[in-house]
Length: 173
Image 1 (cartoon, rainbow, N blue to C red):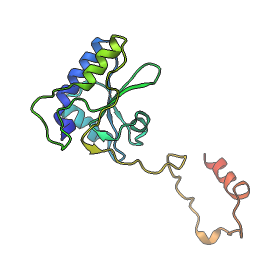
Image 2 (image 1 turned 60 degrees about the horizontal axis):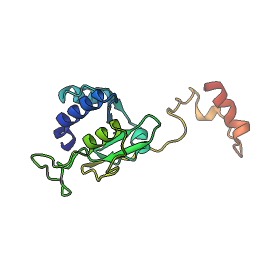
Image 3 (image 1 turned 180 degrees about the vertical axis):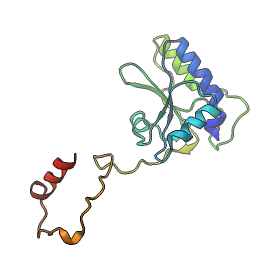
Image 4 (image 1 turned 60 degrees about the vertical axis):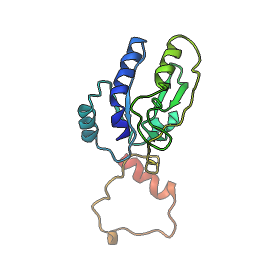
């Protein structure tokens, strides 16, 4: 709900960034979010910038984001020059002010565009915690088991990678 309430401000920030020659993205950092649900949300809230579905939460991890809504301003060399709240409209106790008093992302965009360091490079974002991604196993999918019954497979006393596993991976991957 808090991120949705800030959608108009995010649109204004994207327009400002574009005027300053910067690209903007909305990132959906949710492990279980479906592409269709994200697309519907983007349409309902008139999100006009590219939306990235970060189900592995890798982009959020890379910039240090832990909360939604949370913004990051990353410059061309990959340095995160700002991370935190979009503005101070959401108070520390989670209440929404009618108007923001500080506009952290706007200030960061203006500073970068002017070639100045960002005055406040990190602020505390208030909102929902970004869930942990599922454990990474080094592969993205499990293969279905072969069509053979367990009785047809002789089981060795000791399983080794080189003798038993490597050939299966080689045949199936």
